[in-house]
Length: 100
Image (cartoon, rainbow, N blue to C red; front, side, top):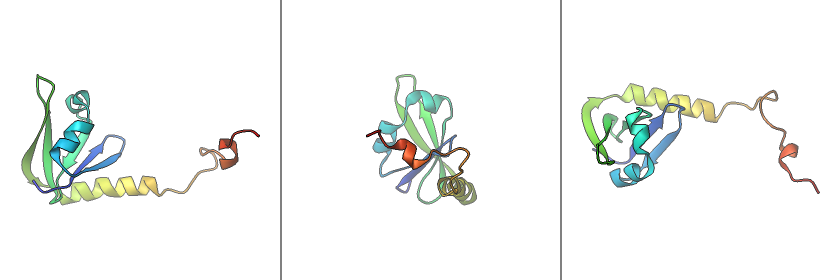
């Protein structure tokens, strides 16, 4: 397993973790049970998350290299993060300031 690890959730949130301990300390056990995350290592290998009966989270390599799947998910994340603002859905910055 090559570090860092890249976790992507159903809503295209992307997290990069420098260790398995950092990853397992951040994600929640119930989210692992629900299949919330897809996980890759730095070499593009797909990793598997497993929630144990005693509340731990384990990470194992599937040995499947999925560069294209990782690239697609990261592209979706970047596209959403850099989308132009929409006047119909985004707040006017002036509305965010407190009244004086």
